[in-house]
Amino acid sequence: MGGREGREHVRVAVIGSGFGGLGAAVRLRREGITDFVVLERADSVGGTWRDNSYPGCACDVPSHLYSFSFAPNPDWPRTFSGQPAIREYLEHVADTFGLRRHIRLDSEVLMMRWDADELRWAIETSRGELTADVVVSATGPLSEPKLPEVPGLAGFPGKVFHSARWDHDYDLAGKRVAMIGTGASAIQIVPAVAPDVERLTLFQRTPPWVMPRTDRAISAVERWLHRQLPFTRAARRGLLWGIRELQVSAFTKRPHQLGLVEVLARANMARSIKDPELRAKLTPSYRIGCKRILLSSEYYPALARPNVDLVASGLKEIRGSVLVAADGTETEVDAIVFGTGFHVTDMPIADRVVGAEGRTLADQWKDGMQSLRGATAAGFPNWMTIIGPNTGLGNSSMILMIESQLNYMADYLRQLGMLGGKVALAARPSAVNQWNRQVQARMERTVWNTGGCTSWYLDAGGRNTTVWPGTTGEFRRETRSVDLAEYEVVRVGERVPAAVAAAPAPAAAPLPGTLPPEARAADAGGAGLEAAGAEAAEGVA
View 1: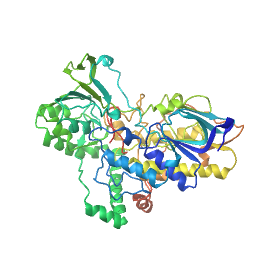
View 2: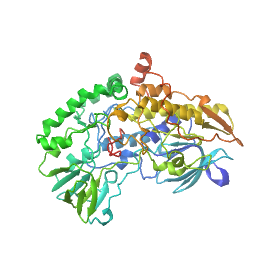
View 3: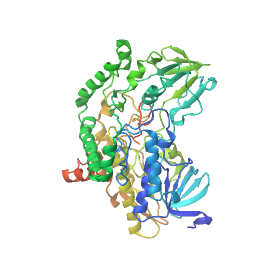
View 4: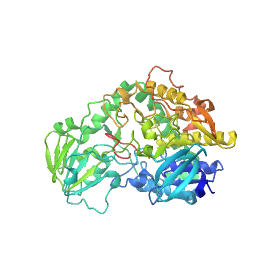
């Protein structure tokens, strides 16, 4: 369809082709909307599960819960699937639902500007320009690797790369390798490469709590049952969901209940780490759950290998090929692998979104990200985000949260259609601030805020703008439909309400409680990567 000045115009532009972007595309088609494009900067779909292909890369959420409710997979090979299987699943979703015709590969979004005269977004990509009535940003929080500024790094003569940009042409076998960071990626990389390298040195700033990952191959009989008797697959998914819903209160309301889990984690460590000095270095000083609990049955055994060293100190500087830790330890290496996370609370896409007031989303969020129901931002009409502020999880599947946001997106578009004509919905600043006051008030007693750690959940100001302080069922209810009272209806020639600074006031009424039993049961197997890390959002999970 033609647009202003001959540019292509679409009803909806989706940014990104990971779980969020492909899910949005499927939902648009199910809503009868076919006038949309999916803009993807890479040469294939997959998002995080395309970019992260390091040795040992896998999910720490059970496979049958880590998939779309509308695209169940009876043939998951393992209870916790690896990166190749998850990427294959996403390619299958793109094919099965006829999404290829909508996907524009190698089309990086360079800038998005709100056109107040036309009530649409002007989008500049690496392959040209287009306009869209609505933008759905699904770039995800784990899309931009974060490299620390280490003095001397530029002069290091060996190989350097981030875990999310693994160099498969470089063979680590027989090399002296430094692994920087101890997040979700590192605990998978360490046991995967330790048997092949000459020496592996792990630089640990903060030790993680690690629990066993009870991964196993899913038998042919199980897969046959799930194909022939779909209710068995649904029951499995529902059980996995329900167990995790019951765990939420310990994280959000009663952190002291996590003490028993801490005992189990210490016992898990003691089984593999016999050296008391090493065990002391690996024992966290904060409450379990404050950082994401990591799952691995191979991490501790790998650290006990004779060719693996632990430096319980952060990397301070690099002198030639020698890495110097903050405690003075010096280690000469041939290659450095950074598992130092992603830009989560300062998402780079925010620099490329210019709203109604002529300023970027990054500028508006400079004091902390905040949105309405994790989806819309004041001053940015007809713009939505998938996996927005305070939609992350600490113990369950992000696919559940994504599907809840897709429900909200679908109703948002229905409301625009019912309003008729050229129209936009702009989140009221008062509604955005009220929602975020409520979220932050609930956050105060969670383990993420009270557990005594500094995690990637917190932004530079110490606010937790990442995690949802409740169950996935609660979030499903809160995003089931759009409340027009929280929005300003904007037509041509009308001004979008100005955004105001975030209000951190904690004294606000709590959000509604859990869903009633009948709704919770319906949500257990219904519509509804785990990608996460530790330290500075390290790695995928």
